[in-house]
Image (tube, rainbow, N blue to C red; front, side):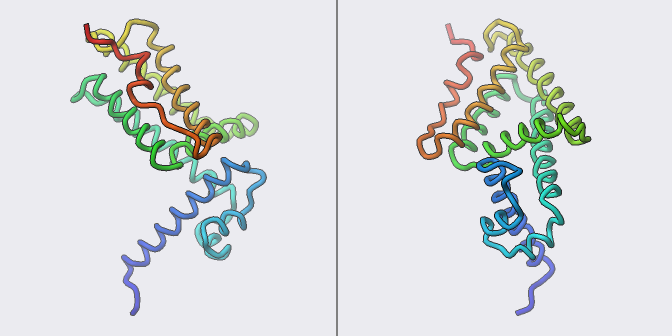
Length: 204
């Protein structure tokens, strides 16, 4: 039976998701320079011709993946700037989602490492994407610092330097992403309680 326009669009999206997942895994595990388009197509289980219908070059695919990751960072900024929830609730939900993503798949870990790879590569090229990542990272850090300070004022978070606490939070998450890739099946995600133990004030 002939496929509808909607069915073709669903197939197209499914193929792109396969390409994204395969490319991220290969870029992270064997490096961007050591990965070629044939590797990506083989891992995705598609023909190289089909891959080229979606992406003309490996560079174009890499930049789209980084753009996707940056959009995720922007969503976190918007999430942290909500006023309907307390800082404690926002941080708890954020860490719960990180815990779930790290527990049930590789995408988050690969995306975080991919951003770092892009920053390292961009430092040499001064690309627009490199500058955007730096800007968005700075905005996310500022939003997190403000959120922690507000939580401290409300008595929900421990006292201390909010900037240092924000850096520690993201360093912990980045470290967990790298440990997941290194340890593979031997990796266990620490509970959200452990991840936020440095921040959450104990009840008296």
